[in-house]
Every structure is written in C-alpha cells, then in structure tokens.
Length: 452
Image (cartoon, rainbow, N blue to C red; front, side):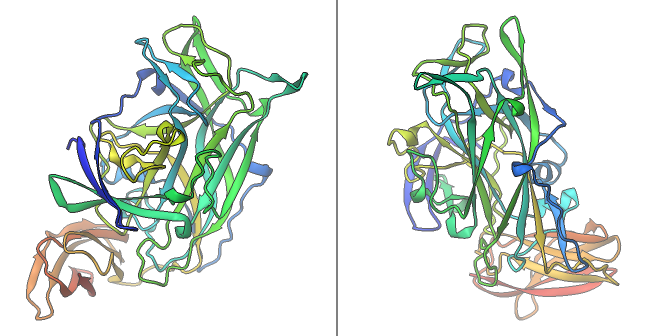
C-alpha cells in the first residue's frame, strides 16, 4: 500500500491534519555493509543480575526479531547503519555522488510487552495488568573515531564525545494515530515521547524520567574499513546499559499504561562546519570527524501498520526540519514514527524486563489464563486472545452474543503447549457485550469482550 497521502488524527489531543508523503526511503547499499564486534561494555561498568524467584518472570525482549518470526514468518529485514548528528552541518556523499545532510538527530524506540509477536520468539506476553521494571537496554552502536584531539582555548585536549539516553514511561509518552484519506475508518497507531516537551535546541525531552550520559573516548572506538579511501564496511559493537525504570501502574483502563520508550542523542565535542563531508561512499575527500551510528532495519515495500490499540511497538526519529522551525507532517512536529513510510523503519534493540506477578507455574491441564485485549475494543479492531495450553492441541475460537448466537467463528488452529495467541477481528460487530470462547480437546474456556 503506497503511503502517498495520509490524514492524521491524534488519539490524545484530537489534532488533525493532512500530509504529503514520499512512498519509500532510499537506503544506500553501502550502508548495509555492517558487522558487529562481540565485545561489549556496560554504562558505569555495572553488570545486571536480575532477581529470580518462583513468582518472578524475567527475560529479554527483542521486538524486531519477534516481528521477523511472527508477522514476517521468518523473513529477515535488511540491516543498515544510520549516523546521527545534533545538527545538519555534516554531509554524506553517496556512491552516485548525491550529497545529503545528516538529517536525523534523534533515534529511539517504544516498547510494549503486550505484543503477541513475542510468542513467535518464545517470550511471555504481558497484559496491562502486569507492571514491570526495565532492567537493561542493549543495542548495536557504531562509534567511528577519526579525531582524538582538538584545540580548546589554545590548548590541545583529548576529545570526549557524549551520548544521552533518555527513558520514558506513559507519563511522558504520547499515543497517536493516522488514517489514509482513502480509508478513513481505520486508524493506524504509534507512540513517541511527548512532542511538546522536546527542546529543539538541546534535543532533550523534559518528560524523561531518567537520562543516562555515555562518555565516548578512544577506548570505545569501533572500526571503519576503507578500500582505496572509500568506506567498505562498518564494525560496531553491542552495548548493554542498566536502566532500572518502572512502568506506571497498569490497574486502570488505559491499554497503553505500561508502555516504555527511550531516545538516543549524540553530541560530538568537535563541531562540524556547514558543508563539511562526514563520510563519502564515492571516494571523494571527506573531513575526519567522529561519527556515531546505530543499526537500523527496513524492508523494501513492507509497511508496519499497527491497528491494535493494545500493542504499539514502533521506532521513531527526529529530523532536520524540527531544528529549523518547520512543522513537517502537520502536528508530527518533533518525532516521526517509523511506521509512516512504505519501507517502515525498525530499531533492533533488546529490553530486559522483570515482572513480579506473572505466574511461571506449569499448567496442570486444559486451557487456562485466557486474556482478551484490548477490552473494551472498537468495532473495527483486532483483538488478541492470549491463553495457556497444557499440551499441543487444535484450538477453535468463536464469539457469541449474550443470547448465545455465534456471530464470529475462526478455523481451528494448531497450538503448542504453553502460551498462545489468537486474533479476533471485530469488524461488523455492533456495540455490546460478547463472549469469546476457546474450544479444544484439552478443554473449553470463555471470557467477556465489550465492543464500543
């Protein structure tokens, strides 16, 4: 589906607008020449040892990998390196000679543990009633260090570059949505840090509940492999950072209450001048500046479109228009979700969480633990039905009204022992209360569903 013209409707604030949008992101093949160093380092040199008790669930979550196994059924996204700068002075020259400013200044990601894609990678799916702590964050960075010293006030000093990582819970996250003008009845969801609290001068957001400062010296430099003066490949490294941020209370009716997000800002000590070349893939001359990049992912022609209000995993960027006072895409004036492009953007990262109230006891028999969400749901929503199964079995899902009449029925699906998920589409259902029933040889279980 081509995203050529969209109309947006914010779910918070009810702001509306229309935008013109290019169909695809053009990613240079040279950016895809990446490799990862096995070494890693931890902020403040601290290792995290999660607390494990019988009633505690603790695990790593990687949405990009789970999305590849779940939605894409094993197909892999293309990885590439994207460098970020706090301004647009530093230019990149591509192999065809095209010169472009480094236009992205912030890269970040929103994490939602309620996404049924996690089942594809063997993870437990949480609900909005499972508060959790983010213990650690891990991702692949590329710190290309080409200058070790600079003159400051007449003195030669060592260069120390800085990375800021900000963390947000739902108190600092804005949930929004957009719809195609050709299909105004369907809203596609996203979530980013609150747009009105971003400083376009410092690129910091005042709603962050914590900010970590990562100081980059020569010891943390990775490699840029050159061939005849032209970049051939990038060597990055995985890093792990202790976080210790708690999600907000999930006891209310807000399906987005336990969202978590983080953003990354790079601030080099040595500032570039307008027009300087930071990196050139065509062999032309370029300045020796320190560069900071992240491993991102995309797939030509594949759009990540989020319909459910219950599961909102997306990455986001902040680009050059914001720095110069422009309002690109109407009310999306500071953060652009990775879902708005035909080639949707992903930020592969790992989030380690611990929740204190997710039972890890084995299921004795039959179907148990059925949970339906979002609940209440809209009349055009996708609803996840998550449940536990004691043994492999075929499971059929059907929906009945309060008079016992079957209004929706899905074909039986082979499910495995452990946690599973079914999807129920509420299209065509009028407002009211329904029963969602799972039926298999192992047993039968039902749960209420309210459609607004």
